[in-house]
Image (tube, rainbow over all chains, first blue to last red; front, side, top):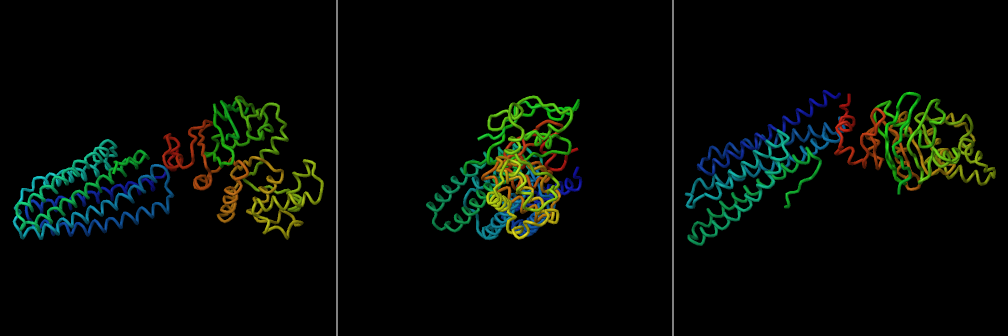
Length: 217
Length: 249
């Protein structure tokens, strides 16, 4: 039996759960910043992003140490290699949450002239995907991970809807071009976060089953 | 193409049932690794492939073991079988004679007396075993004076000298340092172009590095047999997973 090794793998698991909690937090704050025009919420995302970057490096170093010391095979190798891939997507989610927060700071100075309905819907859907991808990893739930992959289509379709909304907005009032462009950027970041959540879910599936489930992107 | 075909093989040492209903095919020009804890039957199966178990009292085999479709335990001449299926052991066992005579021993036994022909066989065998450059000036020196890694490669050269089709390796690198082990692993990869190799190893990384197929044995049963990458990345059986990840027991 390899008790020390098992303890280290559990530690890797815990670190990933912690990083998952950080990215969920960052997304929540950036969505709140958007909805409430709350600059303080946006500032909190910056702090979280720094922590996420730091956590990524810690986990990366830990994974390389495990590979060097334990020469993992089978499910251990799948867990460690999946972890190395997942943290890249998680770190990107942190970056994009921070990008959204930056735009929110600019938008907070202008009035939102347009109904945010579809962007809000995107935000909720994207948050759900990230939360479920992290939960799927924690609970080793393949079915949940697969549902995350499927939900990406919803986010993609909403993005197309937001694009149309923004075109309509500019058509109706060309002075709103700048705001429309910023909101479109926010929507694009949400759409990308959905893609990263899908990637995480795919790595969860691989780490459990050994099969790559490609979501057809 | 299958070199060995084994069907429903059972092996008994007296009352002890050492191999249970083993069936597997091993492909020509590939390296097949047998892995498993001590006493699982992997060396027993390896030795059955050139009837080394014939020497063990009370050994009884049922089922079918075929080499190129020909029954190994049928009418096949054992000397011919062992010429076709050579073996290298865990501990290098050079004969207490010169390097040259070690290599020439097998061919002489098979009737080759011509000096020029023997010279050619000795050189080619040592070259094939990647040790010619190290030993070409020491051919008349005793083989017992060589290092452990050199002795093991000499034994491989000796096995190759009778031009076998198959090389069985029973933990052939377990007593060697990493450099000698690396040389023999490289050698296996080179040799599989011309030979079929079946190896027993306790070194999981070695099985991963050089074998094409891996069979996992436990308590006389073959638990899983698949291409090596699948066995070590996504084994199908829980027992295989537990063994290769070091959680067995």
